[in-house]
Length: 468
Image (cartoon, rainbow, N blue to C red; front, side, top):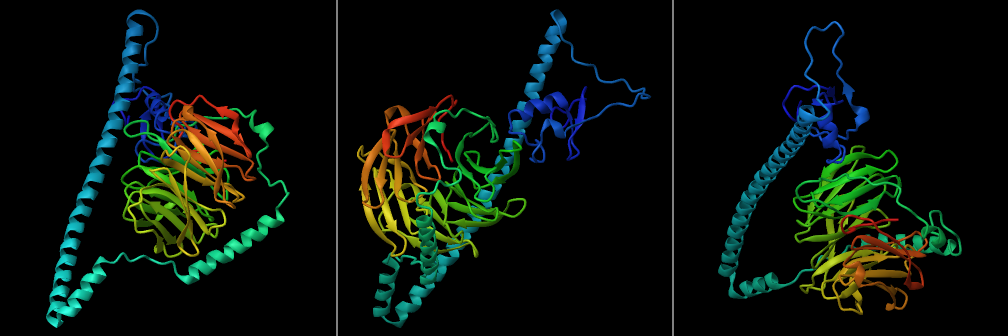
């Protein structure tokens, strides 16, 4: 057996060619999210092939487990304990190897960074020396340039592209006015919803938990989940199987967003933004935004991505996978979350001091600063699908709803019993708003913010993400 190392009494082989004790492997699959413990490929009980000895074989088989009372029952209990011990040992060994690889990579990157910094410092000193020899006035000008806060303005061609997308979406919205869109939530039906399924797909040992979920634009059956285990997992809700498991940084994955064409983007607390695509969802780009990245949003044109970090919003070109501009006020703002308007020309970012900064992407200027009524830190922000409203979830359990046309608060949902509001979500029509806080999800109907339509409870831990 590839897990316990002992002779298997009920052997089986996986499509990848590894042999296991079937009982031990099935026990492990229930805790690791249904992946092969060696190759990490998706694996289920239906994929296993039992190894049956030939009837003519004279080789004695391994003794079967004993069940029943007395001494036999004791042997059965010891067998179960042994299986559990082997699974735990294998998990620990795998985690140790992964940690060693990450440590080795981190040490190598640190060494490379030290050498690059030393070289740049030497070149800077040489340049300063040459400028000093050329005249004191030049030295003064150089010092002034170094102290400037240079902002990466968004190219005019990019702004023109975004405006064109905005015009097209506005026209579509006007034509859809009064039309019931496919997938729109009907409040009376939502109140009768029940849980359909439960699936554990991320690691169950070490640092655990799902930090967010995003549904594919092209195929609603596909979702990508962000994990505290540094992984992003593509899961098919129709088949109930994992499609791909990808490493998305060295720390907890803080968010994800789908683009068209089967591409998705993730952001990580280590300050990296990664792009995955292709039939196997392989990594195609890895960018450093320099700070803790808290949110990532793909522009409705699918040509750009907005990554929100502690004090800066970085715009990334999805064709070149390179940053093309930043939005910042130059202050040491501590952004905790962010969201892009469905038309793509407004960005809202929440702060730890209870403010929401509303940015005009076209002019790269702050359109408004809104203060939450409670003054508690903003933990999540989401625009409604029609763009008329946006909600700001707070650390105090309230969700404050703002009217984008008037830029003022029009209602409050939730309450202290929800704890920190970790995520929000509007249905496609903008008629229902769901919010995740504590171990439950609340849903309210538009314009009836104070009345909870339904609550979905029964979660074992805090709900961290949701999506319609």
